[in-house]
Length: 180
Image 1 (cartoon, rainbow, N blue to C red):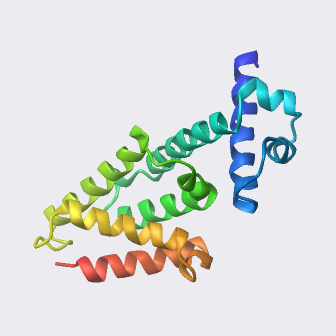
Image 2 (image 1 turned 90 degrees about the vertical axis):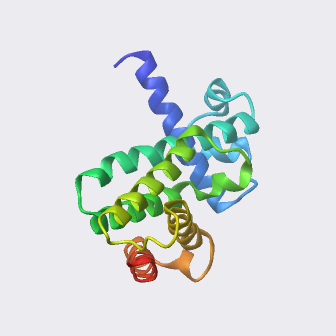
């Protein structure tokens, strides 16, 4: 293993621990994050100059993770209804780990914009297949789907559901409300 690989793994572990620490206590400081990551403060500061740098990188990391889980879900390789379920589950899973990041910065990363592109492409494909209604623009259907996912991440009692239950509810509501 190279030093670069080791540093990348440490960085990823710190970012995941930071997300966990921030979910537990939104104002978690660098000492709390270092403890959660199981690293010394010096190691943490070698990777991130300050809390703001860490939060900025955490936002980017969360966006990259969202794209990674969507790639793993292979939504383009399956029928639309299966793709909607896979996309929803993937984003809920990543969102539950990293949702706290959204409250720390207003800008979107290109990867986050890519999530929207994939939602729109799936809605367009669903309309082309005759599964989703055509009287609404694909952009609107995609925004509604994304809003349902965000609601399940942030609004009780939906945010208290398990991933599978939340996925089932979102997919059913989206498909029943968007069906042609």
